[in-house]
Image (spheres, rainbow, N blue to C red):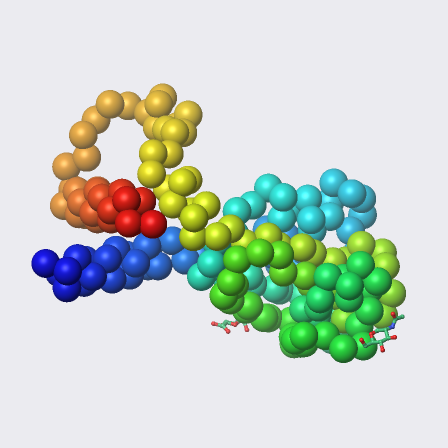
Length: 177
Ligand SMILES: *[C@@H]1O[C@H](CO)[C@@H](O)[C@H](O)[C@H]1NC(C)=O
Ligand SMILES: *[C@@H]1O[C@H](CO)[C@@H](O)[C@H](O)[C@H]1NC(C)=O
């Protein structure tokens, strides 16, 4: 009994990981890692409109000859201190997996760029938060307005089957924790 519960929980986690891990292109497009033109154009404006979860990856695309990405502490972020980053990424094509919840701080490694606003705070949501947002998402306008035609393809019903399994698993987790 207990062991089958554990293995179904393991399956649920696997499904959650598969269905939810995403790659997020920083700034929403290649070349967005640069000095912003305005506040609205800033990378933090982009970050505020996105949701980041444990397991997601950030992807940077930029001119590797002119720039780099430094992961820094909060102090390093606030003072634009490029001297002792936690991690340094170079070359113009970097993928950084978000392994834990909480804030992650990034600044440009190019001299003077951080001071001009080329910096980013990504706040990664905890598992708890994911649980609450995952149970009963409100239908999107597209779903509400779409034609009421039942999908007939096998892939569609398989997907819904998995979705249901995940939802049940999330409910089980909700009772356990
Ligand atoms: C930047 O950080 C280094 C190492 O933590 C420190 O020694 C240095 O004083 C800092 N520079 C500034 C301008 O804060
Ligand atoms: C960027 O890196 C990813 C993974 O590291 C790789 O799959 C992709 O081909 C690279 N793209 C370019 C344009 O180098």
